[in-house]
Length: 154
Image (cartoon, rainbow, N blue to C red; front, side, top):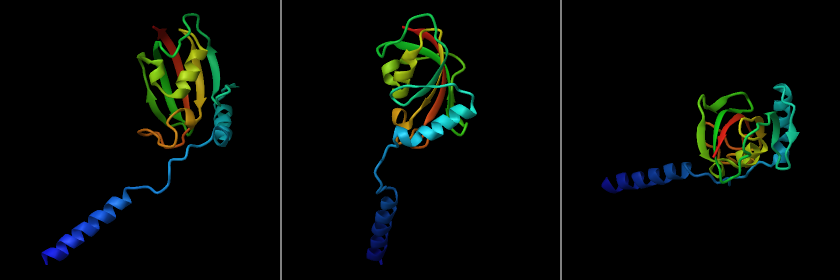
């Protein structure tokens, strides 16, 4: 009897552990495959965008007059982040400071397009954000929208 219980336990453990594994590899979406959705978001939300060579669609609302950030700078921003379905996943009411080289690649490319005091809207392809893994409430392969005010550059 003990042997049957042990065998059943081992079998159940094996089956349950196999359920947690995925046989499908993480495959990032291409910028080209997301462009239609990104352009549609811009059109629906009145964003007159410029396309960056990286695939980011952006509109500079105010260029700013201060220092232009580099990747080695600490920047302070007030921002809102949304999925393209309009769901807000993050926002800051007060300035948040961080090293620019420590954030998603889309911000590393987009934030230096403005100077201190500037404001930008960006639609970032998933390959320049959280890719095929996602993060928290951000699903895998999700292009993201950000509106960012650059309040300080140090």
